[in-house]
Length: 145
Length: 230
Image (cartoon, rainbow over all chains, first blue to last red):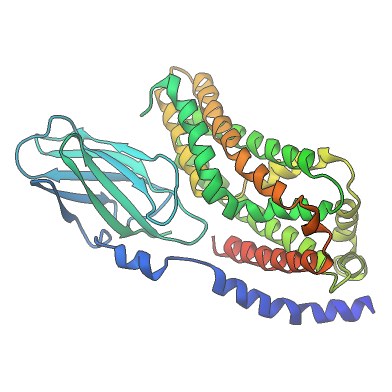
């Protein structure tokens, strides 16, 4: 009796396994629409107030769980303090993960940080470049796991 | 990154807010499984032990990250272990869920399955008969290794704190402090979730209990798939 039930078990589990695969969220269509930066291909430019902000992340491909270099280039006058980069996912709260940048020259800044991996499979991340007292620019992009 | 006196409070608060969103989604199935598995017995103490076990693991990981002063070294070292724990957690949830549905006598099946009888039957018997809450402490410690984005973020802060520390020991202490604060912050949300299943109307309606078992089974399989894909 028990042995025949054991043999029947895969037939119960297979459809459930398929259902589970379908339930895995990954990145939703709404999140895909938010993507405004092809960071895997090169730097992206957005505006923040009267400035343009160009963000690049190296090395390529941009992968989670490894140390990354964030390079921010600003147009216009040198800012009063270096920009800060907030890293999070648009879809869920991941806790405070900030990259502090240091000046390379008057308008170029660089800092290191890590984008963590989300076991949900969601790969859409946001880097919010904050210019103290001057606004912010959001870069939404896809990372590799 | 943060002032020393505020970093622990920041991560206590982070744990609290993340707990009500992210953790309920990730650890919720485990919490519900514990509560439903205990059925007629109160689950508050076992849940507390599970959460303390989880927080202890976070503390140990924080100490290692802080001591090393590196997140990536720790993460690369424990990636495989975390994947295994996630698959194991999924298997555990699925098996207990299957038992709760009453569709299959899980204990008997595993006891009679020739290739698995020696390995799984004693563990199943132990789980089904477990009366002592203390068992949930090591269970929480193991399940605390499940990969989780906000845990990684807190570990990043622990590693950064370690980099700024004067010695590895000081770094380890700071890292442990950050992770313990984070873990403690996540407990209220998960305890609250477990209280929902304490409602008598929920546990004493057999069909609802079985439906919960089916949901556990699906969640367990989702966990396993995520674990294999991780």
